[in-house]
Image (cartoon, rainbow, N blue to C red; front, side):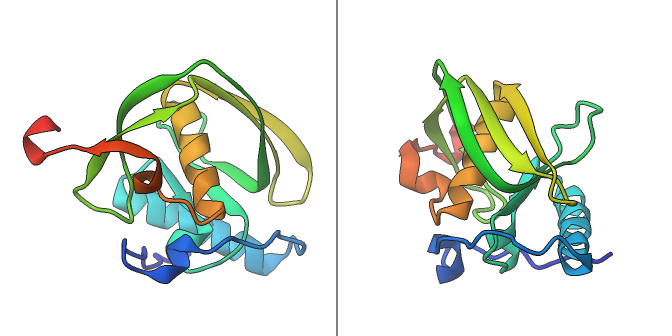
Length: 155
């Protein structure tokens, strides 16, 4: 396992659409393990493959709630409920936060590291993370959805 470099805001890779994962093999597993190490080292809650320079439909999240790392491969948001509005940041935009509207609750369908499909539902911060990381896979960053950027004295 290794730490990967997190791409920063000006990198064009962050604005490209990712391709589906078709091979569930050692290479994918290494990516997932490296992303988990990178996420924990960076003290974030979510990380998408394009943020480490890999244009594949993969993200991970660890909400610090004891459930551990959730790996989402080829995820699709299948249902959302309600709305929430709040501060959001991104490991690719260090020190920047913005007000972003997201669903209050989100349900996704995704594959695990072995290709098995599963459903996962989250609310509040977890729903925000599911939507934020899914956006990364389509080349959308949180600043594309922001209502306004927060000044340093607001966060």
